[in-house]
Image (cartoon, rainbow, N blue to C red; front, side, top):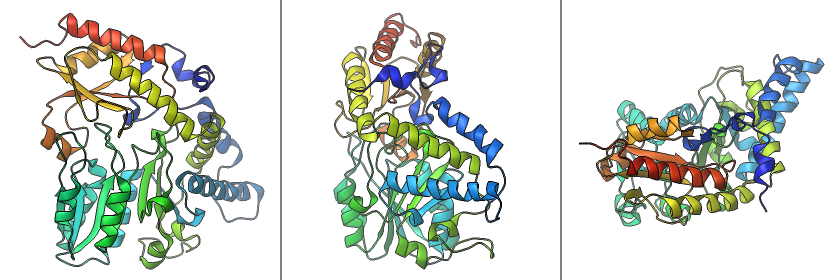
Length: 392
């Protein structure tokens, strides 16, 4: 049984009664994670590589952060790369592989992708005379595997795709995508930002070549985490300062001094997640939350993506015909509910394909309660019924 009261007691930000339903934009942070930052500044502020105690403490922290991140993703610690955020990491890593690409080589992205897994390839294509092609989706927002197969060819070098959409929550049959990419001789390049907070990941079982995520989406600090297959990392020439060491191999791709205080926060995040039962326990609770939300959505709501909790994470995009989602979002905030209203949610291809105009994005996290979901559905229904945001 998921102890939601115990979970919520660890977040000071939840004590004021405001209901945060904005997890895709960034989750709330347990008090222990913030405390770890302060402790690091007090006890381990400096740099690595020196014989005195503080420096040794920082070195041990970096090692632990790599080990714990490798446990999260199912890889070796040497294959972990830290960066400012997923987007920065993806620009760096795509630029690095670009050294080995030739004019006319092709990159496949998808309409489900967040632009952080599209724009780096478009910029690389601009500079290296590459071709970027976009895999289509079905009307239910699932990936069109036949279109993927059609676009794959001898010039395809990378298939970049998300495990889950940041806008509509739709998940992807990753095993099939990876198998098709590898059969064509291409790399499988995975955006796991929206998936990692909600389901366990095993990059070995997935057979991914590169996978990226962001810890601030699972109650951690603003930090990007990447996995790269060892053979690839060893074969690439990184952009780095010349004195930077080559061991571990992932370190070669970390430009500049790491944010040690954020690594301390990351370790505290892993402690917190393990203390509540891990991501598998989170997934089960979030499924219950999602089912509660779906069962109580007001009449007239248009939901994009799966109508059930199958094949999705607990991220939901909804709108109402003739109703301003922007006005609804403002009215909900005044009543104590934090949801986003927007247009593309950085998923430009998906937005163009589905043409939802503006919509509310409701993103659940494991610290949400069933009572919060019920109150939100009631508030949303009342606002819609009372004509809030109704266009005349």
